[in-house]
Length: 381
Length: 256
Image (cartoon, rainbow over all chains, first blue to last red; front, side, top):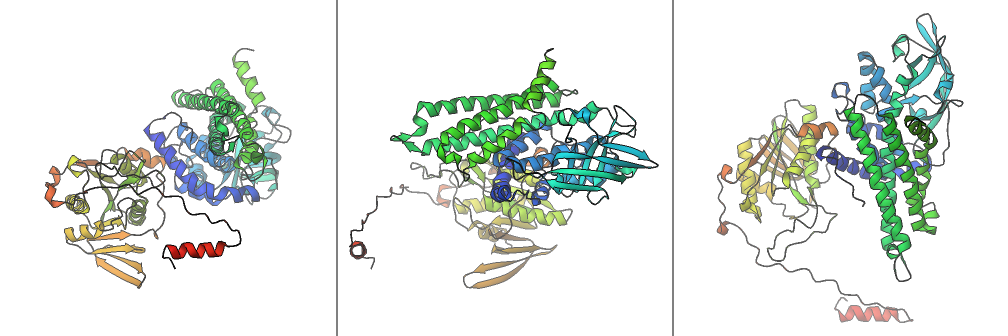
């Protein structure tokens, strides 16, 4: 198993616990979940009961009182076992619940955030639209005021946990404004709301991603999370920027797993009278992969330290960590796939799943191309 | 209700477990030390009771070397309220008689209504400690329980044996040991790991317990021999007479 540096006693102990949880509760479910393309929903409650959802939120809202690094360690270890399941749990941990925590009133926190952190209320976040991906300003979903109510109309896509969710934290443009956005909670069963379809994917098949339709969904003021006058887009998207380090940690988990299964195979598989790992062509892949993984570990957790230390979000560093870790995952899994040769091309191999899952990281929370754009603009180009 | 849970640190069963051929003692460097899994289940029994009964106090007790605090911290992270570690050079190589004596003395000092232990450890495998501790404390001992119910003044349980199923009940204070039939333990969570640092942790020496071990009072390992390496077996190639060859082999070794 590839060995990386200590993150301190607390996080090292958390990592051991996360590893034990993933070994027992995730590894036992992953094959069936992947083939059925179904997230094992009982994991929400199991993870919640063990404090693995919201470890980074304050204790007074039901969180664990840790920093972002605690959530990253959990995400990394869960992704080591399954990126799909880790993604489902991770969206509950950080994405869906993030708006409840950031904008929720004490009543809203009691009503939705606490049950969500216990894994008893699944909350998804809906931002992306069919015609508005990275360019969020093109968002067309709207909320208009009618008397005391808000009426929400729009379509959201690529929504992780959408097909399973009890509630959706949806980001919409406030009607009659040009630059004010609101976040509302829409509940399963609200007239006019439905998850129209679950989307088939090339990887992360144990997570469920859906397309959601909001057709004049009427909600009361108690469902609005953001301030009544709405928020700026930057305020609303701040959550996504922080989320990039979690994606980096997840990519790191996959890269470590690819390395470990590749190493095991290279030591055990023999050709021409010796283990294939003794051939320079193969051993160099591990030398490069281990170096890249260590670098990804360092940049990822260094960015976590910045996030915990500074009050302003380090946008540049979050993008750099996400870019580097996701490209590392793709590189490592590609090289390890070559170690396996024909055996890796078969559907029964773990490396085959990792190879498909790795592509997720170059897309989610801002594609590699978008990260290049953010980084270069911070460099004044 | 004060419950003392006995925690034993053992070499990870996934690792390479060896005896030191010179001292006859466990080679602790050979495998990573972990909390014996059966003790985690014992702690879970206590925690489940405490979840339902406010005012329950759980003390995790372990004797062992300097690595033990890590194991006790795990017990604290899972939810034990405090921990006691008995650490003393004179305990190196302690046999079960001395071990039981030390555990009983520590429990007396801590105070208890109920002691919960695992039925058998994965390293020593003696299975005797819970009964010996009960005897030394002068309280009932109900061992090998597959089911446990704790009430304010009694503990009831069920012990399955080849001969049948026994329902047992003891008034508190008492000592019980539980089997693997009881549920898996919960995981420590981040909140628990953080809280564990602030919980009371006491380290005791044998002097604190008024125990002076003597050479005469304990069993000594005279020698240890490594199990011989397995020799290659006999391969029978079937050329039409494999059955005869097999029968001859078994007869020659007096197996038939």
